[in-house]
Length: 124
Ligand code: SF4
Image 1 (cartoon, helix red, strand yellow):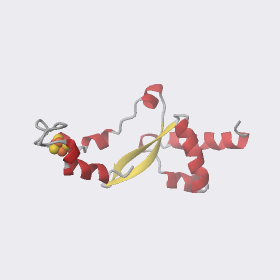
Image 2 (cartoon, protein in one colour):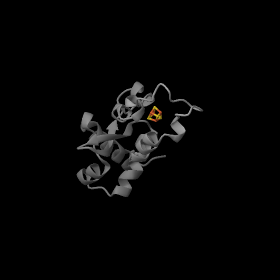
Image 3 (tube, helix red, strand yellow):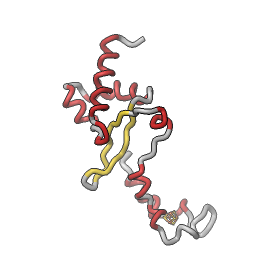
């Protein structure tokens, strides 16, 4: 059973993330705003993610991949989470070999250096 203080902290953190809207908020920014330690905040963040009240998403800001927290407002959002910005960058979408590429074929995802490099560059 969670304590009242813990529940109040959860509500406050959730409210701040909700207020950040479409822009989201980084964990560091949130800790600074609320005057909480990053460890204390991380515990609450994990609970909120487990409860499907918030989600962590990797977004691009000034060419860099940044992890931000976003509030989940609907059941649909909690069930289906897709970061479209990351998907657009999958090298296969702009690859000239896409129609020749297949598992077991000479050109295949398992041995593709472009795909491997892209996966390794993901900062998740
Ligand atoms: S796995 Fe590599 S070769 Fe295949 S479509 Fe994607 S980028 Fe092109």
